[in-house]
Amino acid sequence: MSTALPATAPSALPSRSHSWGVRAAWAGILVILALSFGYIDVNLSALKELPANIWHYLVLMFSNPDWSKLGEALLQTWRSVAMAWIGALLGVVLSTILGVLAANTVSPGWVCLPLRALFAIIRAVPEIIIAIIILTVTGLTPFTGALALAIGGIGTHAKWTYEAIETAPTGPAEAVKASGGTLAEMVRWGTWPIVQPELASLALYRFEINVRTSAVLGLIGVGGIGDMLTGYTQYRQWDVVGVLLIVVIVITMSIDAISGAIRRRIMAAKYT
Image 1 (cartoon, one colour):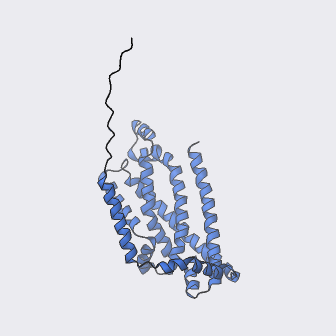
Image 2 (cartoon, helix red, strand yellow; image 1 turned 30 degrees about the vertical axis):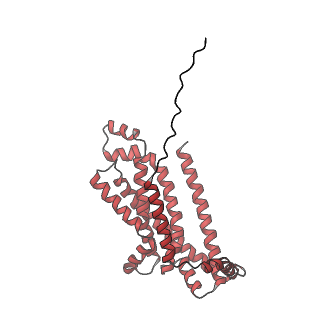
Image 3 (cartoon, helix red, strand yellow; image 1 turned 45 degrees about the vertical axis):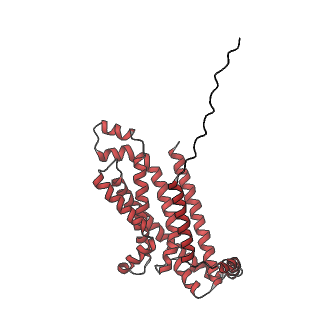
């Protein structure tokens, strides 16, 4: 004898949620986008001509490059790389010290919070602005560019440092503390060996960033390949500009490839 199952009322479909906050955010983005296009006076006819103009200047630069300037271009590129290297070295040393102090597992709030605010302020100021401020004291020299890169790198690298320390496993540091170690000994023997490979990889990445930024700093006259690019571009010597761009691209890509390979080996050794 079969028993009839009680009829169940069909479940109501869940009501569609209306996220007015998301809609308002998208509406605000569209309004800002429309105002931006109107403010900068976008010329659609110029956009149509842009590909043809780009091709025209590419032909001027690379159809017959003036290789007689290759030696000077390599010298100025080396100056930019040296600027980037000194800036990375100074910046990494200072930011590592300050980043350790800014970690909330190392310092109290009254120490780490002001330091983090300082790092945020530095990150908000482009390196080229820092260089303009510094050159009033040091003048238009490559050392000015190196100092600007060092100071500009502190904001980012110090942030990477304290984030690496705060996310590191706490077991080794707690073991040092249990054996009677001080806070400095906990950082030195419990935390530093864990975060050192990651920080070394980030230091190399900082150098890669500095190599590209050093070319931009040359635009304000602190020396390097950017300074040379500015001069020859102003005089419309496109055959020389083409050589300079070739040198910049080859050197930058080579440094990125070498640095990237070293960083991968460092991080691979960390997890083996």
